[in-house]
Image (tube, rainbow, N blue to C red; front, side, top):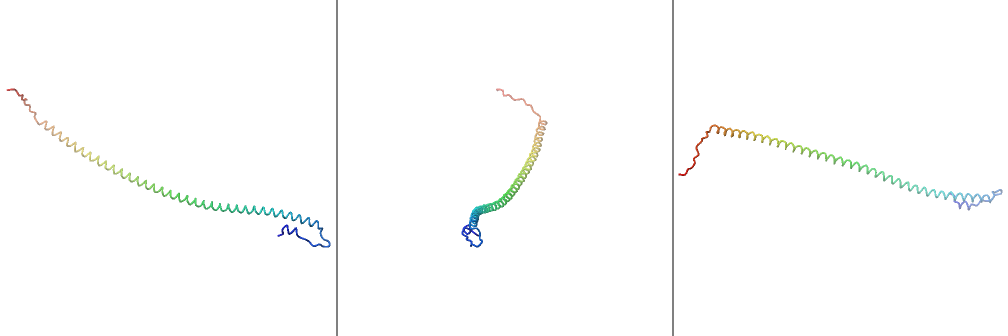
Length: 158
């Protein structure tokens, strides 16, 4: 690639019917200026391109990191969800077991209470029967027994 200095230092041979030297020099000077301008602009654009490529690479790295983070977050969310589901199942099983135990104890207590009530009824029936028998016996005793009236002996002084 030609540099502006190459163009500036270029010398042409003179021919019989050659070009006008002043025009060629002026044209070459203009070419040098334009080329220098283009090279400066190219340099600016190249540095911008480099800067954009660096930023693009950072963004790609960030995107990659975000994608990995998202995958990890999704995986973690699934694990948390599964753990919560297992915990919920354990709580439900424990609650069901406790409910069954409470139900069993309540049924047992009801049976014990019913047994006690039945025993108390039997005792009451026996007590009533004994009381009736005793009252009947006292009544018969009173009806058959004559009450003897004896005069009360009053002690008189002698």
